Image 1 (cartoon, rainbow, N blue to C red):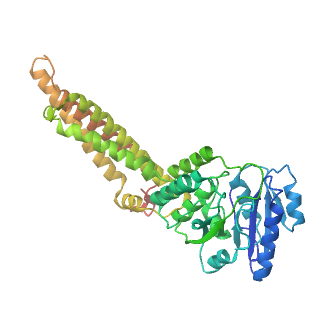
Image 2: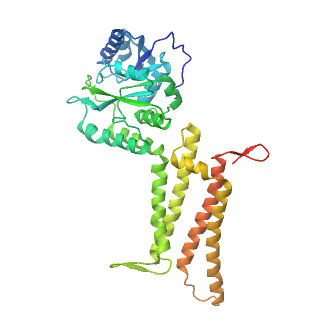
Image 3: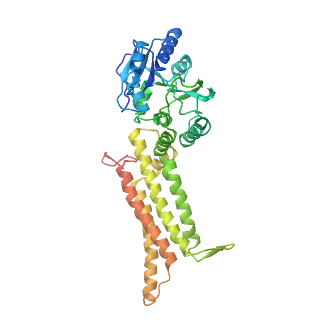
Amino acid sequence: MRAEKLDVDDATGPEVSVVLPCRNEAETVGRCVAKARETLERLGVDGEVIVVDNGSTDGSAEVARRAGARILEEPRIGYGNALLCGIEGARAPFVIMADADDSYDLTDLERFLDGLRAGADIVMGSRRRGAVEPGAMPWHHRWIGNPLLSSLLKLLFGGDVSDAHCGMRAVRRDAVARMQLETGGMQFASEMFIKAVLGNMRIVETPITLRPAGRSRAPHLRPLRDGWRHLRFMLLFSPTALFLVPGLVCMALGAAPLVLLGSGPRRLGPLSFDVHYMVLGSLLTVLGFQIVTTGVFAKVYSHAARLYAPDRTLAWLVHAFTLERGLVVGTVLFATGLVIDARILVGWIESHMGSLDAVRPALQASTLMIVGAQTIFASFFLSMLELKRRPDSTGTTGV
């Protein structure tokens, strides 16, 4: 599901929509709706409260309706599915979202609204910069899971946010349309942050207080399952961390023995390094190069398909790459390996085809030929992805 900007006249409609995803929250959803409505009235803000019923079986929708909410139905179970349904159905240009379990303070909407009015695309609540009341969050979520995931998001994508998975946040509806959000589960929180950062959107943060949930049932959140979904999504949206860094490390570890042991075995203290390490080095070099090229393909595709601003690596590649340059580099590498192999063959013939003791240069040659061939075909594939288009002499465009 994708959120699209509705054709609504924002000048005459409400200014803000409060969206509450709800699945079996009959104990608390009525209080949440009442608090949100009372806050909007106190602030003098023209707004609405939307409750997205996500397959409730306890009468939550009727409780919310009696409290004054507009009810939307989303049959596809999932936190992200419910929020996207609510955002799509919102009548206002500003959307404030929070859980329907009464853990977030819906009397504290003004700072979120002020942030959007000041030009922010997203206003994130921060429990870490605010307060977490006793019993509101399990210790391993508060001190391990949430800090680790937020730190990893910041490391991979940047953005000065301390609590990227806070369930209370505000967003401009037109910004959501640009994000093209798709995930239906708990990883929706990560997706919104990642796409906002990659889209160069303005993100601000405001401290909030998290209170113990008012329901008696167990939470929908499953730490291991949902934590893995967040981590998986982060890696899939970070080709540099998933592909380029491991690939370059493999290439460096592989190239070292190929070069250093090319003239013979070496010793380092009590350790002896011989041709066996060259075999391992060849494997690591080829594997690393394959991972790097896959990462480049992923970066080109993800930026082109989702219209993100290129990062430094991709910007350099766009500037430096042409099909012809790739073919030249690949051909030189392949030809160098071929020449080394040819010299081995000539030496073997001159020795009347006797014993052949040229394993070291043969390993270097085969590695160069494999990497060269991969470079040639990778260059063609990058050109097919239209990494960079240039007008030719006939006035048409080509890579």
